Image 1: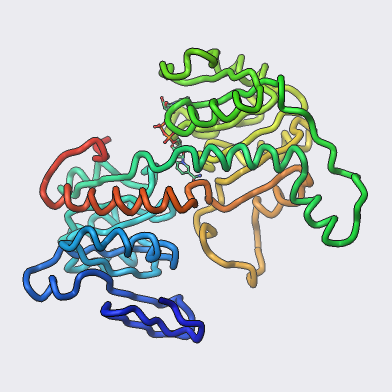
Image 2 (image 1 turned 60 degrees about the vertical axis):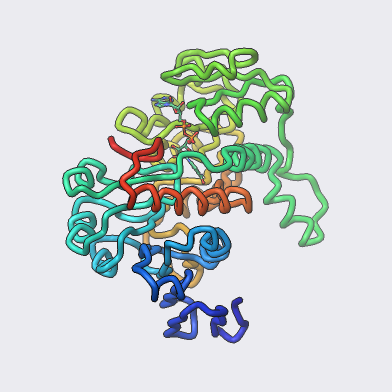
Length: 370
Ligand code: NAI
């Protein structure tokens, strides 16, 4: 339990608490009595937030072989040395799991990198392989959570909910700037129809939209109501475009000015996948060309360094994100697609099972090998 005075009371768990804020918090959790009997598997949990501990600790009860230390430091080449003596580390989307970090983790004796997310574009998988470090991830955890946020963003920008909320709070009951469009009967273009994209297709169908999609592989579960088209045709026909493909060399900056010009005027663009799918400077150019009714982004190119941090007291020296936010038809959230009770529990369960499998040398579909 967390007290309000900045102290942490944590039952029989050992607690090390250095500061009056949680910024240098280190909490060891796990079955401590077990650790005295035999050597537990030690997991160092980087960039831990309160909600991580809240979702992992109850699940940890079912994994008595594992102990976790939560630290708030982000994983990068400078903090990798903190993993000395740990069997595995747990990292998230904003960590730097590049070659230099992995070299240090290897020197520290770390045998597994456990990504508590689906994406792993921040991991140098080849280097990990060379060093004999197993990389595992959580490929699926409530895809509907992300898809529901994608539709939330689409509707929020369409009906300008963020403006309406503030207007009514200010006793301004006028409708200026709030006009939206009907999605019913319009065309949704879904790029990437894996787990999340498929969930988004189903949501769009529920809205009474015609659903078209582009993917390098067709998803057979969608064949009854989704029409697969080329990417160019998707850009040309869609009233709502939602991105759900991974970030790879061939998807980097797929939303650029050339492709934006192929889109309908008044299109809604949503990105809940990875920031670098969109060339932000060129998106701004497109917004200035009045291409978009609305743009909803849960991920954006500058998010590293921002994600899950409170920077509200800082002066931004240069920020393309601030420029984006100056537009009335742009809504940005900070990588919260996964953030539901159900998804967090599923992430914790899979990550701890991944640790058991990694240490046992069991290869599973959750291994990242390329
Ligand atoms: P998935 O692996 O199930 O589906 C990805 C789909 O993209 C596959 O069908 C694949 O064939 C397709 N694809 C691959 N290359 C493509 C290309 N060049 N063009 C079009 N489609 C292509 O992945 P899932 O679970 O649906 O996740 C999608 C993305 O969502 C992840 O890559 C991740 O970046 C992001 N994500 C975001 C979260 C958030 O909190 N905002 C949370 C979880 C995932």
